[in-house]
Image (cartoon, rainbow, N blue to C red):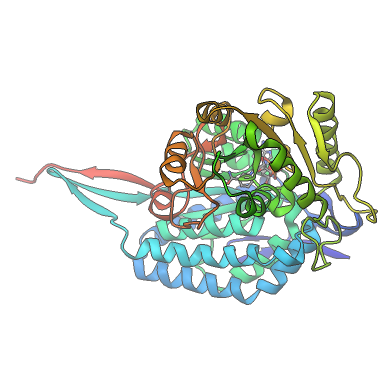
Length: 474
Ligand code: NAD
């Protein structure tokens, strides 16, 4: 059994003062694989103090020094890619066929930060004023489990690029992944106190970061409910916040969509990461004239998807991360049936041949309408909801009739129509025919999907504060 007994403060692995031991599980068996010892409020304050001490020196480092550290961090994480991938498979059931993206994205985060930092204008003249973008101070980073290492690296990379320092509170459910990552980051040799990490509960470590007066900003990825709690706690000390929250993203198939090409992509964006993805396209809007054709295609395709052992290379959907998440997905499937949506494929219970782990059947509902619970709430599992529409205007209206606005997908052949629909949808990102993805483009949500943006220059600006100096001497 793997016991994680340390936290990382001021450049050292230290035993936390907190004493709670939290069980870690293998999502594919439901069995306990280890324990992590949680830090408490005292550990969090010690980590914040270390980051505060490190800030004055680190904020004065040169662009080139930060680029060198970012390169060193990327290389150190790359060296542990295989271990990170293994932890992701065990911890939350990432299927081996798709599991390497977590380590790849984690490494890429440092490369993209270098690219952003290289020519970033920290100083500009505005009339008679000289405006400098200054680093914020100590940043609190709080991450979810569904791609914990990726989020830690993308936020940390921008903290380093900006000249700030940080304390990370990773997801409770990702301690193996976190441990591999911290060991890697330690090897990169950052100055002491620039990067600190405290494992622990959200309502203890996360809440302390969100309220502490020495934290200048919280960079958070997670659910909308937690994002609201963080924003509320942070307002007392006027913290800057970047909140990357939940979604209920529309996938709009236009009248002229080529279903042979679109269907595999619709499933990829709907069911990727075992359906546990903030950007999942889970509301599929289909023209009523093509509904029967689409239903037949998606039913056959989903019947052919293997949901089960993540270590089997033919598996496309692995287990849910926890019993709680499994219960939540089952409850939404029951809700969809009770609301009167047509269950096309999947349903309650475990897929045939699986036992023990938190496996679910990929499930598709049709004939839903947009005010059903399964069309409004984020399920965070492999459950898709088809909503028929009659006109393009109605499709846009349904797509925008949501509290969220993180992502959207449009499938069609006519470039003018696809562009017009993409233009009308309220979302931080809209993808036409599923790609290609641009990693330097801003990422973030409209409405209750969040506040602020990550990635590229927009992401770096979010860690900086403009300061204008003007006037003359004599
Ligand atoms: P969650 O909100 O339950 O937890 C996220 C983190 O917040 C965890 O580290 C948790 O310990 C911490 N936390 C909990 N309560 C807290 C509090 N009161 N104060 C401070 N921190 C607290 O989310 P989750 O279940 O880990 O992840 C799934 C959610 O994350 C989904 O809603 C998904 O859409 C969202 N998500 C969003 C993005 C994005 O970029 N927009 C990306 C991935 C996941």
